Length: 391
Image (cartoon, rainbow, N blue to C red; front, side, top):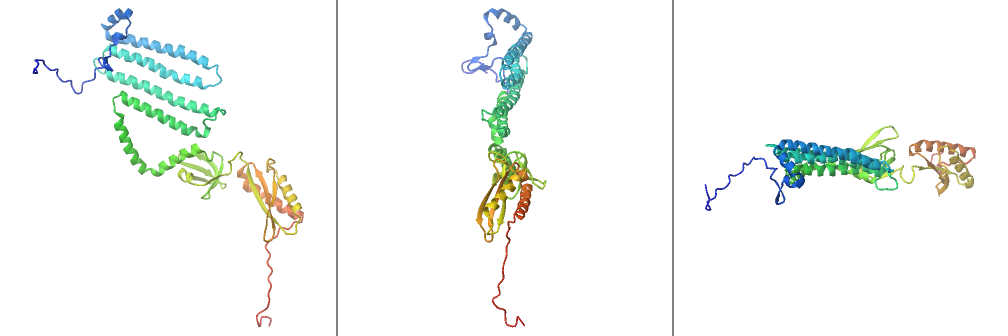
């Protein structure tokens, strides 16, 4: 039906009609493939336009050759240059970039080929598949490259940027960022609004957070433990709750300790994060000091006592010479002069055994030197006996 101006309006487009990718716009200008062709090649292009499917196939093969050239010639040349450097990181990155660069160049050619071929249907779907494949190849390469960079930074001691124990944390964060960015780009490619998905994910995240708050607490505590590193694998630690043992595994949910009784104790990371930790293997070196406490009777020659204790500490084969054993008179006790023999040992795990051996050696040395180890003595004085007690 004509309107007031006598013109007939165009029929409405079908709601489910596929968008016309061949007349799509870039900004306000129509996307015109003909404008990309130089004037010297316009005659050949007009011939190809008469057979669009063949023209699309020719363009696809042409870009396939260009992609092979970039991959084989250019990247190989870059890799030969990188092989002359001391670091192997650049070689690794170039090797990992081969596939995504090839996919990008060839994907661009396939995109142009689809535009030229003017497929009767499915053109948008094919282009979306091509773009998704290119994004996936870059995502996989990015995951591997991030791991390679972190490993290289951890191995370069002079950089002092990332320590080996924090690699899992940074590796997890970098991979999550790459996956999120790739997912966002793929959603945009397929015309899906990510805002709604993010809102739904936020609601689901709140529900999951309430349902698994203990698990999440252990997970985040594990991340903080890895980043802060209050202990590492093989350290001997004491918790304020009484557990003591060697750390055998640091997981994202829990930490495992092997006690001196060969019993494995699993402690949730949330508990450790809020506990007071004594790391016997911490400090500038792993050595540990043990104290042998002994009393000598009043009247003993204190110089002789010190010499005997010093010789006992020096004679033990597993006490350190740097620092060397030393003797201290600590206090005047109720019935004895209280001495301490201080010795350093290499491994905290040997504390119990070496303490036993030193105690045995000190007792024998005191007996040989006739140094009395006093013990509690009580004298009982009776002023008077009750009446009739003597009868």
